[in-house]
Length: 320
Image (tube, rainbow, N blue to C red):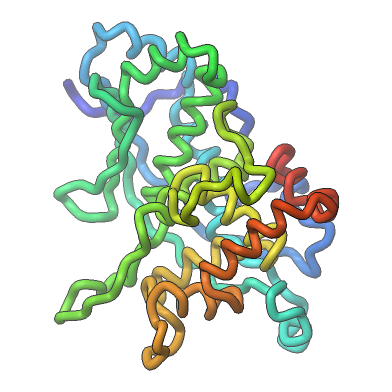
């Protein structure tokens, strides 16, 4: 089977999200003091590789996702918006005067992913992402064809178009998110990486914010409904991250976290900090360790009055 670039096709049923170089007035936050700077991104080459055209779900995929390029570009637009767009302040003084926990700020550094190849394959599971032997600038997303059958036949799932777009968005995040500094592991440097639950949680955070959460995801409404650990991963950690961004710290918080993983890794801001790994990492970003944040999140869930304040749930259900 020859690997080729995805051909033009009919318009996708997935709502589009503008890439940074496109005009989209809805992206302007009316409460933001000044517009965020435009993030420049090189559009990657997309390739589509179907391993078995006789497999019935190869044809189904083409029906549900007729324009692969448009679907992936929409996902990329969400990634840029939620991981690589830092809120702008009108002046340095304005930034300094902002409440300490309400001023996420970073200089976006988006990976220069050169190509993404989507493989349609017959294997168990849902999907996974990997690099290539060539170099880390080329990524592969492997999508399970049997999973498409599962989406079609399971009453608990969203419609296949919605579900496949959500899965592809999650996997494309893995092609672009940061997990460690580029020199990690070189010259004897032992820089801790984040737990897998955080990596997967960030990917599902973007999917959540993009409005592509499936019906089986359930936002906890009390601390007892949470998973036992904050890094349980996937939607469980995604809801926690959404709370950090929309309630605790402010817009751009998860993008700032992603950026810190690139700059210093999963360590605290000060090398001589006694708790320089997990606790120091979160405290340097949000003023509290992750255990304290997890407790605050639980208290927030248990406080019915706070649920009616702010726009946290509204932003997730109806993203701008």
